[in-house]
Image (cartoon, rainbow, N blue to C red; front, side, top):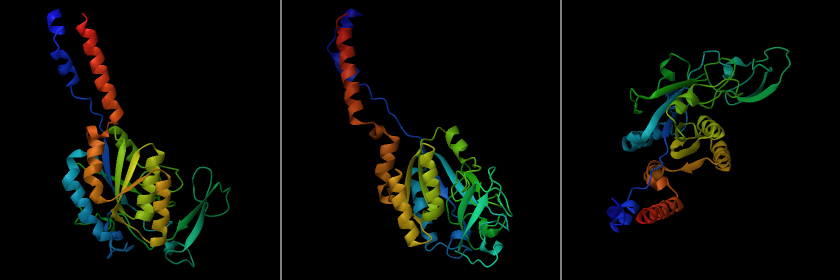
Length: 280
């Protein structure tokens, strides 16, 4: 045994051992790719249909590398507080301020308002159990995908797939991600300047590494998209293009994710171990 340990080839064997691989658990979040947000829908996003081929290609190329694929779904009641039709004298895309008490209930008359939330008023859209609220026909979906519905509370809107706009309640998304030990989310879908933006912000706040694939999203308006992109970058959200996905997925799901200094430390440790063994 001791003769074997003194064998010079031992150093080569130990140093040649594979470096431990630290991989991210990555989830793909597909935000609100529903009929209501397509150009023919009730709340059309310009070129919203063009995100589908890009998202489908991402799935085709990297589906086996995602720990989880989640589809969020706007799911409103027909008298939702975010609809302009529910506010006298207001038109779609006007704004109003909604007041909520300390428990998160809407002040529909006089109350002790603790939270004031500026609400964009939208056309009636994504009403639950209607064709308008269904996922787009041409988006790739699988039986293993998780669906997270949002915006179903009639008295408060929910841009983010994690929380309502007042953060009074949350969806099951964070729980689903934690169950799969996800630490990184890649976000695509509609719309860049609202639901994608708010989902990315909340992902960062909850401690996830967040990437938004810019060309796999479209915005409601150019001005708000510029502001959203700037704010996401300020918060540490990574803005990437689909052309960068090969390098990104290689980085996240292989040894390319390990800092070079770790490789060096590993080889030094292996050398020290082999030298110690050689003295026995």
